[in-house]
Length: 327
Image (cartoon, rainbow, N blue to C red; front, side, top):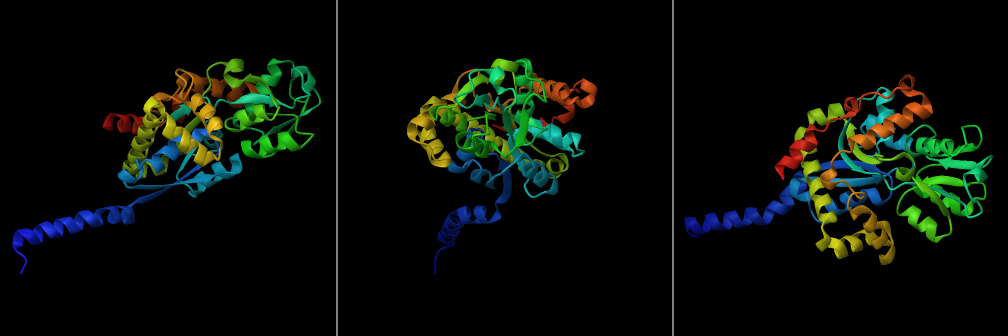
């Protein structure tokens, strides 16, 4: 007979060995929809470093082909969270969906690119600007940048084509795709392929919040513990990503997930980690940059009678504040 104490120890050991598989079996599944690109690095880190798994989360990253799939799927509950251009969250709210922005991100490092034969803004008159959706996010910034350089709407053609990857491909092979907004890694690859950058978003319009994370408010209210665990893991992922000691590992991860050569991965990581202009520390929300997003939507589309609303109406940052405090 096994002594009582030994039986207890063996039982405890058995439970310890079973714990990982038990945790996996009980993990909460989360689907996060994104556009392929550099902004997803915290998600890659959270998966690879186990930050999500250690908090009982099984996070699946879904790549969207365009803004409509991303927005409609979130509203329908096909996925629970989004990390993408924050103007898409505003568009959802204005369409009657009760979204809440949970965490900030970065400026998206977006820039306006043209074919090699386009010498300046004036050369775009009568040409074609390709966009994702014609009434959201970086399309609006593109219109604003063209207007600032003497090209009002109607002086060029707008063609919706899909997400950044699709636009990057078209810019290289379609002779009638003359200009587009591009973000990393596609923007850096575009430069290497000979496309010309006319200006970055922040050069043109000042502080600008590109990427952020959001969810439907009702879902967040019903699942505060899940939201908190997700955000805590996400913030921990940002900290790991920005730590200089992790540079080589982060470069390798970026190369693997985005299928980049190591040198290109390093260039992309440098954008994310640049002090003051890279990814926001801990995902802190850039209120000034978000005001610019709202202002451009008001100016370009005439939303809200041309007067942007208070940004607080879209925010649900209490979950993030509690998550950071828990770390």
